[in-house]
Length: 505
Image 1 (spheres, rainbow, N blue to C red):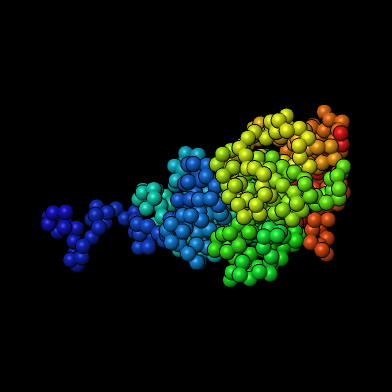
Image 2 (spheres, rainbow, N blue to C red):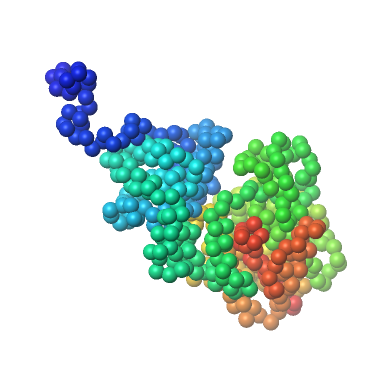
């Protein structure tokens, strides 16, 4: 700047004036100095960067956020803030988009994706977190200046001020009134795509539950889940203080192997680092325990000498628990996974098992195992690839990625995998068909379609097997059916489905 320009920008009191004020531009004077800052704190920056990675690379937040926090040395309360801001924004995106749409003078689809993520982060701070309104606005404007530019930051300021004019309950009332019907209103306010809300309503009815539970189910999807650990039998005991370190643990609600962590970061626990324990939803533990507990026919009562197969083993949580149970019973385990990088994860998950328990961790197409190894196994777990609608509370971005068109390819694959598993198990052996989805097309209909073509399979009493697997004294509520569907709002687990089948000939 020349001396002349500086003189021209001095006020009558001799103070230096900004270029905008010297031009008579007073559009920025409504912003406090904190709103004109060029950045924000590291926690908000991290949350934004994770949202962009999720959007641009189809990444999962639970895989991106923890290493990013470690890399940037964001710890303690700041790490907790970044985590809640990230996951809360992803979960409630549908709700916030509907609110933002009333505050923006153009379609949201016309906004730059990064700018829209900034607005969502601001909306969550205003409506979903206990952040003072002025701080939520000013810090988000600072984030916008740093990441998307000064011009968009002014828009962020204006839009978030409109959002802040009403509390959440008023916004929800407006959204409900504007919805074309009750289901659409519930889907919007509880931040689920309409097709998923409809599918979950049908799943409740198809499993003997009332459709009036849908609101509770959707709300449970939006609640941050507790961190649940699995103490792998024979490898670690819950009472071993040295293995768990200085953390607060309480027994799980259902599975005797489950421990709930009263905190959010299990990475420093010695038992986790050594592979003696893992992070695993309690529903995932229950379906694995049920398969291992149901008797096979045609051999001695004990499991010695049995061969067990995890047909779709990646990333390895169920395989590790299954392997620990096999070790206790003198059985062996083969873990199959079609994707090489996931097979490597399985091998890592099984590394702590005793020598001789794991026959092989192989990379192969599970659809071919039944043809290549007919009748070779006593127990087979089919944890089939699915839409993941049962784990939306853990992977909130999934609800915005999945579409109804995904079902055709997935259900065809699920039928082929289940048919292969039934061919791979010997007569008298047991197959567990598992999905982390309650969608009827991925659960009941897959099993029914496969069994229509076979006269050598019978359904087992799956609820009885699950009740035998729960910890003593636990009275788990299950529907009067021959399969089991778990629910977040009823059981506090992911919505795992389990059907147990026996090969009869």
